[in-house]
Length: 361
Image (cartoon, rainbow, N blue to C red; front, side, top):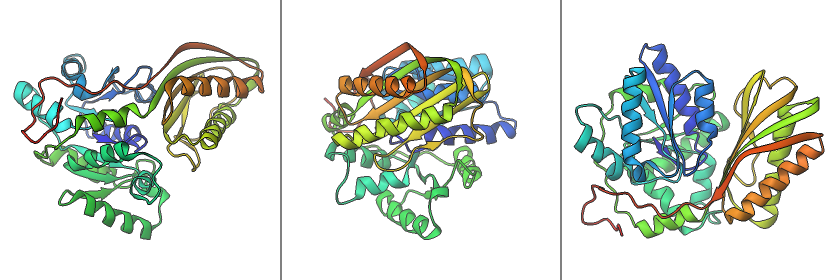
């Protein structure tokens, strides 16, 4: 599946996997990112599901790894269904992944329809008169829709019925003759319908006419940060309080300097369990992924994934400053186990099945 950053892919893939497991189908997941130390992978594994992570580039540039991981899931876990979640800045999945799987692995894998998920607020941003993201990012968003076999409008639990009808109609006009459905992975509405489409639908050949230079510029416009931080205190602290304070600090700074937020996710793991909070826009509220909240604790680990339109070094300084500020106020000591910040390199998949219209360097 594909879809822009913050479209709800991870929540959706976990819910779909759960439904398939309830049917008795051995289901595994492949996650993907430009970096490493993903909240997504940790979330999937925390649900007791088998997952492989492909970091350091999108599926199109890491196809050999993708195939190896898929084969490993079949061999080690006897997977009958593999749900693969492409990084939110990825496009051209038909030419770079689907056609290569058909060419080299047709006897091992049967392909499901390519689903592209769309967040309602992101759709408003991309199509509005004053979009937060530049032309290249809006180009990428449109190309993701252009190669979908099926488009799903997510987070319907946040919308009124009339909003759902209007946005679905607008999305259908963008998608053309591609089926458009509505889903909320949070309350389960539409999930079973989507799972049925995954298992019975057919894949098309919606190959893109893609300008790779513009595509690469879209990815490079975003600063990426992944971090893994230990938290220790002499007195109990609430992960909920800490997470909300940290998100408010990050969001407030981004607003003050005009940085557009694509996606920020923070996962907390304690002896009590885990929970995560996500921010998918510059103005709206951050949302927790699960309830009830974690019990107070003396220790926790925190995984931070941030994708913001900013210089990666400046993004790193921002996250470091915000973490220090909110933890110092609560007498929490930190130990950074991993932190990386960067902008993705231009995508350069090899052995891609494009027609003559495609603009690939």
